[in-house]
Length: 343
Ligand code: KG4
Ligand code: ZN
Image 1 (cartoon, rainbow, N blue to C red):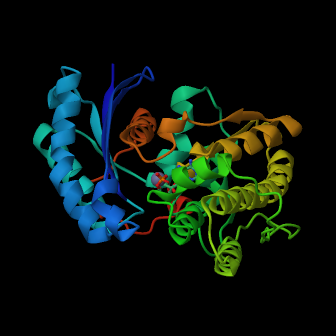
Image 2 (cartoon, rainbow, N blue to C red):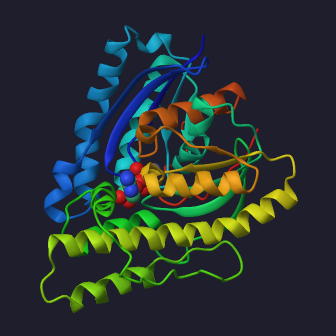
């Protein structure tokens, strides 16, 4: 039995997990830094790095204790080595390297985006190649996942990511941090029918996204209100969420065409990343899959936002292919999936 320790510290969650090669999650701990960042309305990199430093080793110790395991039971250690806020990434990488060195374990530098991209395979038997909408706080991309370390990018955002747009609109509406989940809750009790926001790339060729014009339209709409009632805020949330979903649907229609033509053996349409926790987004992807004869797949909601399981699992996929990294691997603030090497 192989057991992988996964460590995640690239943004505002310190997380670790133990996963085995039988696809069992032995332990998963996530420490969200919301309280540390709430007063600032967003993630402050320096505060994040210090909070990761405080929590990283404590969480790892606790994960091992809860499963009655020690470092000697591990087969390897995996860590999100980028992309992300470099201070936090460094904390995770140094911790993982120290464990690997002291306990003679293989060290696996996982690309955070690959963590999101492969997590679904821990829960469902999704075979390569699959079409993936990866939508998080830092990224919004459509990719063909051809294998571990083997990605073809069909499109991406030309400005903000979807998660960033959710967070910025939530901030404009003063509905609290973290923005995405709060905005979704309000959208559920709002009615967006009478507010018309632009769907930036609708009708344009290709698979690229844009969200900044939509964000500006929300700003203009808010500024026009004499008295921004709670009901109006909910309606704006609903209209904004509808526009995001419409944008994704339009872009995916093109991507599905390309995918089905280039990869006729491909069966799955997958959504992953923090925004994949959004029920309206999931429902739209499910409908798109159904309409095009593809199978919808996504990680369970709690494993869409950042967690240790996704890093442990991506590490396990690499370990099973005998891929590891040397201890002089440098943490990377920027690291595209197309720069990865497969087996
Ligand atoms: O994947 P993730 O945890 O971190 C990054 O890798 O960036 O994604 C976080 C993003 C945030 O922008 C957050 O607002 C958004 O995912 N998010 C959501 C929801 N839950 C998290 N956006 C919309 N609806 C949600 N329910
Ligand atoms: Zn993420």
